[in-house]
Length: 373
Image (cartoon, rainbow, N blue to C red; front, side, top):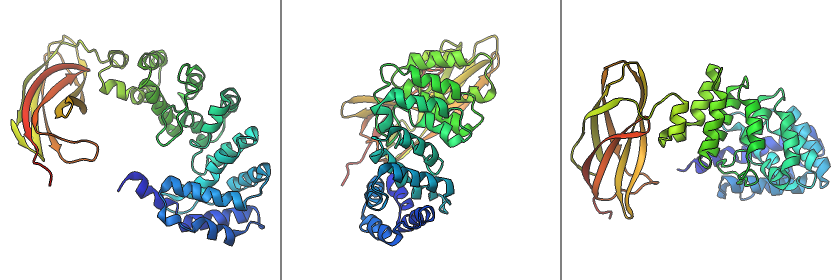
């Protein structure tokens, strides 16, 4: 079962009924029965995003045809919303939020104000993106005010709604060449009192780092002097992909020297010939040759045979501090199992140990993958 298949049950007939009740509470003339009948017809056969669109079509039929009036009604709904029970309760509000994204662009300011209020029900991170794409300067004027909003959901929307690579979200190319306006907003949110907001800032920077690593490393270095523990945690999370990839700038920013005097000794893997699926045990000893304590990020790369040659994937091991001359033995079992996102083939494979992003030791093994039926 995929994530979207599991999540689609958050927008079922009961959720539609709850949404109808909230609309009726804000406007007693709202045709509750007609809306439920239309919105639930064929709903169960649809996937998650299809369900959202299906309910939006019903909303367009039963909400006031005049969009500004519909937006006023939705803001009344936001003010009186009663959360639908359950872990996926927020999904009941998703269609009215994305309704604004689909139908409100010609009423820009009214729609942005509606999204500011509605985001507290679920999240307007998808609905806001058409506005950012259509008129970035105008949208940014709203966002610059929202960084001071009392509600953490609104402040988070400033970061989450502008993420360039938001999962499931429309790609924002308007800031690809120059993300400076967005980085200015993130800087204002870096010490937000809400971890919910700071986590979004870190994820946003991690997105930018996939396209422009030096810019993100430089920004994080600017943020480090005098940084609180919370800001340092944000920076570590923002640089996580670069650290995993062994980016020297990111590692140095976090205090991990790629040239640290440490050796990897006695690297071995067992068995040397593995029949898939199976477990591969690896073991090695880290030994510090430094005269002071050293901080180490220890990872390993699995190099595997593919139809196009060798391919590597980095796996996290440990973050440790070794004293002068100290040694540490690390043991790990890597379980090789069938997964949908990776295909394994018979042939030579290898394990390579990385310390602070630098390859230190490598050893090979062979793997036999039985032919599928």
